[in-house]
Every structure is written in structure tokens, then in C-alpha cells.
Amino acid sequence: MIPRHQTVLFVILLLASVIMGAVLWNQLRRAHERLLRGEVSAPTQAPQVAPAEQATLMVANDADNSVEARILTLPLPQNPEARARAVLGKLLDLYAAPDAAHPVPGGANSIAQVFLLPIADAGGKASPAAGQLAVVNFTSAFAAGHPSGLETETLTILSICATLNANLPRVTQVRFLVDGQTRATLAGHADLTRTYLAAETVPRP
Amino acid sequence: MFRRCRFILLLTALAASIPVTPQAPPAGARFVVVLDAAHGGDDPGARLGNRAEKDYTLALSVKLRSLLMARGIAVVTTRESGADVDADRRAEIANRANAAACLNLHAALASPKSGPAVHLFISSLPSAADARFVPWKTAQSAWIRRSTELAGVLNSALTHAGITVTLGRTSLPAIDSMACPAVAVEIAPQRFADAQDAASADDAGFEAKVAEALAAALVEWRADGAQFGERRP
Image 1 (cartoon, each protein chain N blue to C red):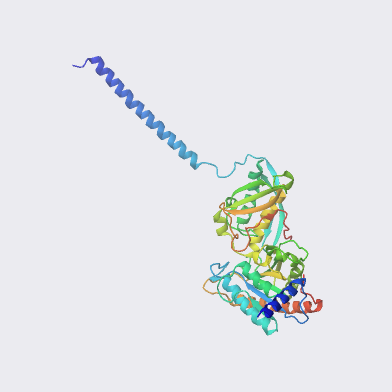
Image 2: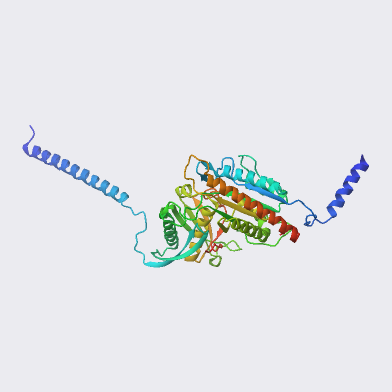
């Protein structure tokens, strides 16, 4: 015969175990939902908390094969790499607009990253005086969707080089990658294997 | 047998002792134009309706060759079929031909805002003085001045024919390795309204007009070359 107080204690412990299990399961479910919500709402673009500044965009025009300066006010981050990406993103947003003079689909998301690397001097050491090399990493979707043609591809490359040079004067050289890999041409014409000079002559209107 | 070998050795030694200097072409040297139809093989280039750029440039090359030969100009083409020819081989053909002009032919859809046009490009390499030995990848740098002059002659002829022309500079490995006046010509015909048609009548007319203007420009270029008597940069 089991004493009454032991039965009562057993029932209380059993109830406590069930309640604790329910609480734990509920907390686990909530934590999982929080995690999922966090993934979905992760910002894909930098929050526009940076102060608005003037940026010079070198905008291409297919009609007369020219690149023209356009000054816009944009929220620009202080980090140079993020700043370069923001400026180039805005340039590609202009090209993706329906009435663009140099229509290229893709927009700001076409640039995966921009890296700024020091350029080595004659002695092989990184020198601030030698300037910086900007490595622009396009997405493969951008390269696949870019219109094929000598003029259109050349204008895209030159306008990116000129825009980097106008906003980040320390950038003296530019290289291009697609999905982190070197690629022969952008869309069949413009050479992506070479290093471009940021101050490369751009055709003026 | 021994005498013969000695004679050959003597000739070889004599030839080696003569300094090799760039020779101006003899008077009456052939005026050769190289037509380089871009793309080919697995590389179709741009899509022009249901026609690939590689086919368009090949057809234009054949048409232009006929027009030039009818005007007494010797023509060398870099490709005669749909096969691919790499950039080094194209430059090699142009350099071996001792070309007086090389046209690298491209095609792309016209800008929706500007309509049909021709885009002329010279190499974006910086101009450099001619040297006895030049790096293969930058051989064109010694020819920038002459290439600019050739682009000017082409521009005049095309504009005279009522064709919209834009001028620019670009980096193209095939042209950068050419040791001759070289211009990339990109023809941008009217947009194809009907994808079933390879080209509308207007496009065919535009293509013929461009070919005639290019042929006229090269005849003028030949006359200029004869006047100045130079083929070196």
C-alpha cells in the first residue's frame, strides 16, 4: 500500500514535469519563429542612416556614345567600400530605369561587392601614394542580362571606372570579376581580363 | 657536298651580319585591307532578332570584300566560315598581310533612342613611338595615330552617306595586337520588328549603304596612303 502523501507528491511532480515540458516546447517554438522572422526581415540594402552627400555619377548615353557627369544627393556610408558600392548601385539603378539612355537591366543588386586594395609600389610594398585598386564583383545575372555590343559594354565599363574615380580619388585602377571569378568579356565584347585605369578617358558629349 | 655546306654557312653568316631595320614597303607595294568578321564558332556574339552577330559580320565581310575587290583592292579575311578564330590568330593574319587597313566588324542592335547607326572604335591603348620590338599585346600602341586617321576617313564617308556615326575607344585584344591602322566597326541596324524575318528590307538597305560607304572610305584611304607614301606609323 502506497502512502497517501507519496501519491500526492508523485502527482505534483508529474504535473510539474508536464508543465515544464509545455513551457520549454513553447519557448523553443517562439525562438524558432523569432529566428525565421529575423532571416526574412534581414536588410538587403544598407539602412539609409548615413548622412546625405553629393555624389558624382558618370552616366552613359548610347545615343551619342558619351559619358556625362550628373550630381546627385545620396546617403553615403563612411566606409569606402560600402560607399563605392552605394555609388555604383545608384548608377546601375539609373541604367535599369525604363527611360534610361543606356538601358542595362539589373540595378543596384548587380554589384555583389566592391573591394579596395592597396597597390604595390615598385619595391613590391603597398604604398598609399600608389593609390588603390578597386575590384568590382558583378553578379552572374548582371553579366547574363547585359545587352551584347561593343558600344554598350564599353560604356558600362568606362562609366563605372569614371564614377569610381570621381567619388573615390584614391582609386586609380579598376578590375572586374563576375561571381568572384575572372571572365573574358562582359557580354561578348568588353575585355574584363585587363586592369582599367580609373582615369581612363571617357567620351564626352 | 662539303663546299655546298660551306657556301650555305657563308650565306647564313652574311645574312646575320646585316642589321635588320624596319623597311618601308617598296613603291607600288600592294594595298591590302584585312576584314575581320568578329565572333564565330561557339561564340555567336549579340543576338539580332533570330540572327547571330557572327553570321551578320560574316555576311558583311563577304559583301565588303566583293565591293573592295571590284575597286582593285586586295583583301584578306580572317574567317570565311562560321568557325571560330581566336584573337591572336586574327592579329597574326593582319600583321602577316602587312595590311594598310584592318576593319574589325561587329554588329549590335541599335539603341531604341538613336536608331540605326555605326559605331567606330580605335584601341584605348596609349599612343607610343614605334620600336623595333613591341609587346604583342600592345602592338597597336604604335599605330594609334594612323588608326585615328583611318577612323576619321571612315567617319567622313559614313556621315557623307547620311549614316549616324559615333566615335570611341575600347579595349579589344584582337585590335590591340595589330600592327596596322585598325578600327572596330560596329553596325547597329534598326531593331527587328518581326523575329521571324532575319532582316527587314530596311535593314538590308542599311547594311548595303554601310558597306558602300566603307568601301568608298577605303578607296580614299588608299589615295591618302599613296599621297603620303607611308605605311609605317
